[in-house]
Length: 459
Image 1 (spheres, rainbow, N blue to C red):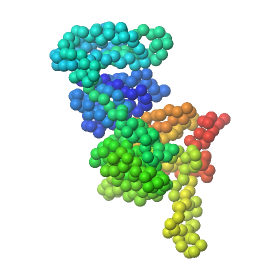
Image 2 (image 1 turned 180 degrees about the horizontal axis):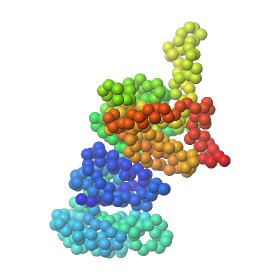
Image 3 (image 1 turned 30 degrees about the vertical axis):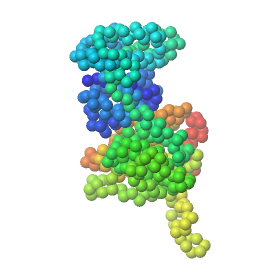
Image 4 (image 1 turned 120 degrees about the vertical axis):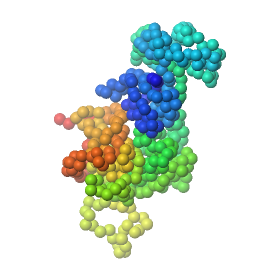
């Protein structure tokens, strides 16, 4: 049967990837019948999507943890005119009408980007009188709710447009998890930083990475824990690391990353946090290639992260420019053994970091495991940073959040089983892998350079 999804009015490019990911989590056979998205602008003029699902129960399961779905409805009819809707309802659904003859019910009108007078609303509702429902009309908590959706053109009120461009009529089935971001709202969280990801997008990221009970999720740039908290909210066991241990320890006994988990009652989903960077990690990684033995080192079901963009300061990793140097204090003690020792850091290439994230994920994700990470890019085609690729990872979706002159993408990959990987492609990838080029922060980071040049193309 066809169902109508009514999305929230934000993050258009994230909508379909989220419900497609939820279909994988729930084991639901989902087919998208229609959804309008302009690929040139990454925007949609309509929040309505028609999908085919095997049952009403599947519809409820599909959206029960969706952040971007408002509601889902059994689609009884649709069309460009009200007459078309009535014809569609009368052709498709007469066999259902008897089920609702005596139950309490109400009719609702939802006019997207348009408005109706009270008299017009009554007229539209009364036009469905042929359904002959005889039960009581109850406006609060009825047994059933039937909704007529109107999809009006943008600016229809100002332009004096009298009729919507499309109608949908359906029976309400379930509501998504739109209230969940309020629970994890950063404004009420005990411990955050200037780069903490807002709760709505953190939860969407967790959905795209297929976070669920029984899964191990990892964030290599954990910060104050936005992504592990979101994954734990969906029942996963989470781990994380950060080059700066202060972000994990917090700024007081109460304001810590662990304290954030305690605040939401999610300590059961906190596996462990430690100080490390991606290039100097204690996590065992499986060597890639057909000659590697077994699956040793591949333990994560999902990796989620928002790596540093290196705008405020250049990117750095643990290490020294001159590896021949030894670290000795004036008293003859090795520096790293001192309690106040701060490990040295060396410059890091932004493009090399992207390659390292993909390589690490290929070495540690289980088959069909997912990597979902955020990456900035300029909106100008000449300065755009391409979506990185890896022979062991297949791109599942690319979602875009547009700002003024730049955007950030949420890129999701799935880990391909070893037997399906082209090893010659892997050799070429290794040969072409980004190396550390340059010495200054701008030389190592094309996005940072473009950002401070206000994304103006150099002549």
